[in-house]
Image (cartoon, rainbow, N blue to C red; front, side, top):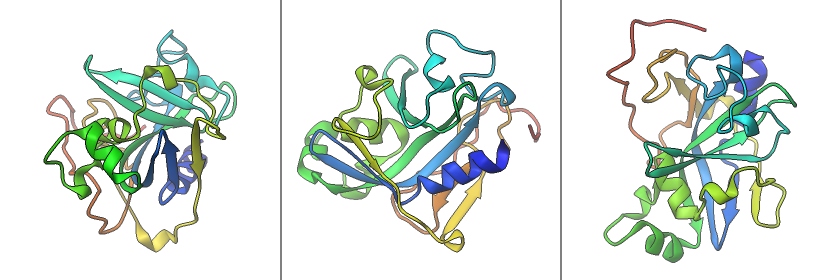
Length: 192
């Protein structure tokens, strides 16, 4: 599962996601390995919140973080696998003015979709998009190939369990990538 999940996560880098007049080029993602990953929403099995993660693949898993921010994931595992990849950051490449309206005044272009909540806000994604297929017409994902040399990896952001697993991937040197912040609740280094 690990290598497949890493491959799926890397394959989302430089892809574009389009919705409601805005297109974002994905520059940073974070992988979650379902029931084998204590940082995953699916770790304890299907719940009303995480059921969508168990398949089918190529749909959005959208959830509310801390009761106020929407975050979007691409379900990548086969039916029953529960693997998903959080879309952490991107560059708005179409619909910049619409994204600015959604994000508010004074937000620079480089920050329009930096961070998972900002990315979903720029795209106009909400809980109503949970389970939406990524083949269109409402939400369209177009994958692109990125040479491995252009991808960096490191520990995941803000998780308290399995925090040092290097399943955060980003386009090396891209200014839209978010800053790394280790969770203050994360324990000692550990693997899955």
